Image (cartoon, rainbow, N blue to C red; front, side, top):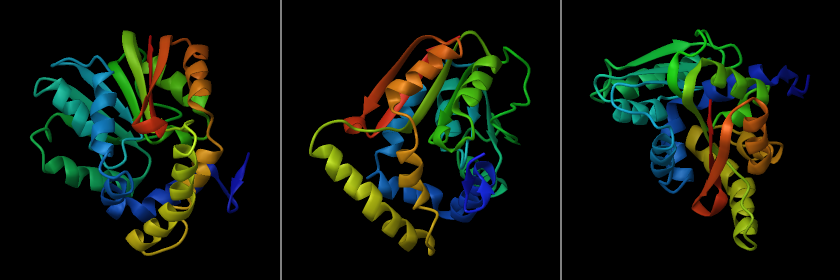
Length: 238
C-alpha cells in the first residue's frame, strides 16, 4: 500500500479534510473562480434525477452537491449524503440547515469503499471532487454501481487534465504554484492544498476513468469536459 507521510491514503486524506473543513466551501469557490456552482449543477443535470427520486452522494463533504441533488429531487425526494470525515459532515449539517431541504437530506458517516446500503437502492449515485481521494477508484465506482437501481446513473464530478496548448501550461502553473499558496493563506497552514495538485498528478486521465466506468459494468459511459477541460463529469448507466 502506498504511504502518504507515513500514513495510508485513507488516513492521510481524512487528516487533510479534517483540517480544511471550516474553509472548504469558501476556498472551492475562490480557487475555481466561482465556477464550482455551475459544475455541480451540470453534474446533477446528468443524473436523470426526477422529483420524488432518491439519490446517494458519496463522499459528500460539506453537502453542496447533496443540496443540488435535493433541488432536483424536490420536497418529495430523498438524498443521502455519506462521508467518512466528521468535520466535513458537521459543516454539511450547517450548510443544509440554511436550505429548504433540511428534511430531505440524510447524512451518514461511512466508507465510500463499503457503502452501507442494499443493492439497487437509489435512482442515482454521485461523487464530487472525491474520486481521486479514494484508495481504489475502480472499487468505489463498482460500489456506486451496486447500490443504484437498474437504469439508474452513476455520475462523477472531478478535476481533469486539460489538453489545449498554452491554456494547459497556464492552468498547471496556477494549480501547482498558486493554489497551494492561496490555500495556505486561506486555512493558515502548509500542506492541505499541496495535496490538490499532487492528487491530480497521479489521478488517471478522464479517458481512463471512462474505461473504468465501462469495466465495472456501466453502460454508455461518457464524459463531459467543462471550463476548458479542467473538470470532467463522467456518466454511466446501470
